Length: 68
Image (cartoon, rainbow, N blue to C red):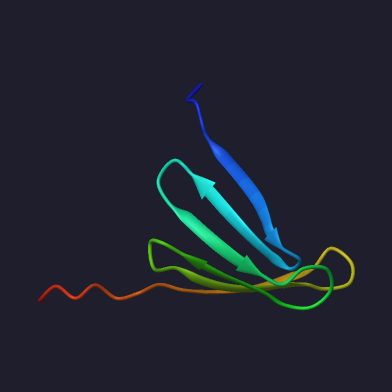
């Protein structure tokens, strides 16, 4: 079984700093309503819990600047 590392810190009310082995991210929002996450790898995610067993998530990634 591989070893993993993940840690989350509450910086301010509604702001969390998430750190794992390969990257870090900042999440804005808590409780009811949408949450916005921005990662050091360029991924941006907006998510929201819906009533019942439902949830909604939209993820976008930064396009590379390389040619082709």
